[in-house]
Image 1 (cartoon, rainbow, N blue to C red):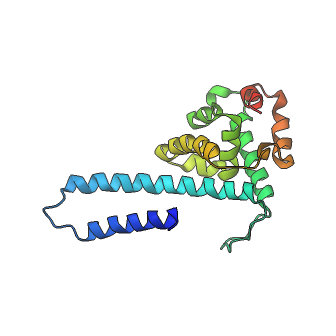
Image 2 (cartoon, rainbow, N blue to C red):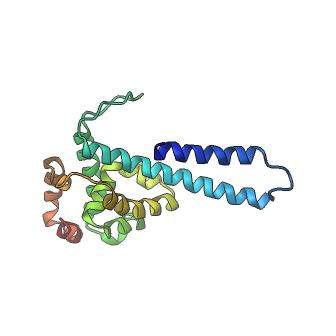
Amino acid sequence: MSVGSEIVESLQDVQKRLANLTIDEISLSGYVDIEKVLLDLSSQFKVHQALHETAIHLVSPNPKPKPKPKPSRGTHKNLHKHRLERHLEVLFGTKDSENIPLRWQTMRKEGCAVIIFIAISYPPADLSRMSSTQFDFLLSAAPRCLDRWKLPPGWLFENHLRELVCRLNENPHAANFIKGL
């Protein structure tokens, strides 16, 4: 049985237990606690799913395309390049470091690989709309995923990513980011 199947089976067991509860088995505050865990799990699941999809595209740059309801923007490389370009603009494009939102200041402190991995996984607008809990989880999950998953050596130095990063050489806010390369 695959790990995915095991997780689904465990969640189905929880679903069955909830459906069969009697009035004496759980308090109203118990429902609140369960709901909080489920909401956190849902947020974490979405983060893992996005990071996993990005990792799959980095490992196998030409996977079989999945049918999507909206039109595609082209190759994954083009999408990654576009997202990274937007993130670098948001993270390092301003001369006034103090006036950028705290979320972006926090992300600036992450390592180069983590920033790029997150940037190619999410458009900046999605990160801006993300709840604080989900964003914090993303910042903690991305480095763990990079450590655990076997991405191809040199994925950070692919031409479509490297040329964008090279534009930052003169930006004082990007000095620590550049050192991480």
